[in-house]
Image (cartoon, rainbow, N blue to C red; front, top):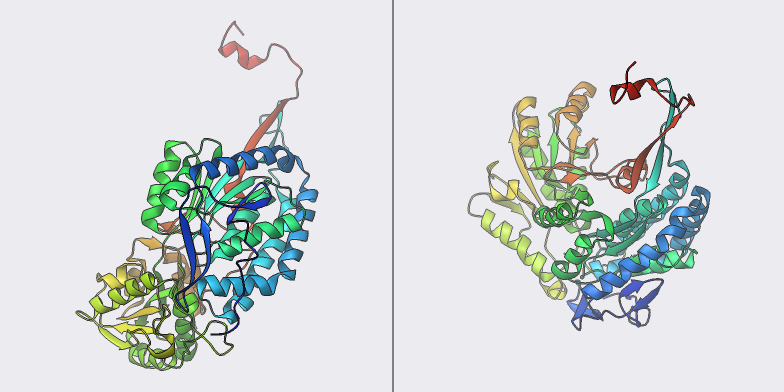
Length: 504
């Protein structure tokens, strides 16, 4: 396999970043970061304990007065420097992300890392625009205005599929708004989150503003969410775990932002550009080996195009090159782990009993046998209520189903517990516009599927959660809106007082 980044020396002091320095966890339990392309350990560290969480929250709490008291311009300047450091370290970030996740280097180089740099640049500008409503005399006797204030210490939990981008999505809006944060990444993929915190220090962001704890979800994660000094939690991950996070946060009356699972429909009407739809379906279902909550997973094709679509998608999937993530010719890397690969394979194997596997449906052998690889897979003939149509598989698997009328296509697209993302494919602006209105999802693309931009919000509805990442809308999660009202009359005995005591 190709040249790999050596991480042991960089994180020799440990995998917890608290108060501006790396240190070892105190749980006594060791955990290894595994390169999923080879199955070999690349870094072993001691997991955090609940005491480490307490120390990280204390560091964030101590840093809050100074950081929240900085002017928007000062925070903006720091985030601009941060974006510059991220850009300088781009190659290292890309290689480490490919190492711990198995992502092809071309994906981390052209998607994960530049997207993260752009997020930092966006929030550097957005930090200057935390504005409330303009002042006004709404009662006639008073002047009112609205302040947006940071809320305090944020305790967030990020998943393993996009560790660097999720660190950015959690940390950047929080600190741009003047909060401090403790982030718990997934234990499988801690490395680029630690580098992100190191880059923040390099940029001059004060110690304690950004803290990282790496530990088990059931101990460290739950302790972080339930911590009395944490005032808000942002969680990205599966819907079942999100429900548990919500239970803990509700018990401690915390603000909560949830970005949970998805089962995105890909709706192709009979006037669509077939070649564009087929290419879009392959790219959107296979990005990050299908480990993307917005990935196209359910392709609904209007019947006149169905057979041609299936044939073309299968043909394109068979051209996808699996291989070493560090090789420039590799299109598809492994899944995050052998356990995840086996979970995906089990879904497909069970589907063979009621559907047809058109292509894929197996792990490759040969030189890739030691990695967590799985071939791009297309399934047809499944019923709408079947497991592969309704459950989140989180692998390189696309299920294609036909529909007849537009009404049916939209109904089938909405027939899922999830509502994170969707796409509609049509040359007819009215048809496409109807789909964007009636498909219940936080994002609906037209004639494309997957692109995201820093200026626009990301988040879902239904079992996909609530609240937004990215964009200025994310400040709704990370700021407290305060109404301030001034009396303008200087009258001691106001007329409304007589409703409480005395006579008019």
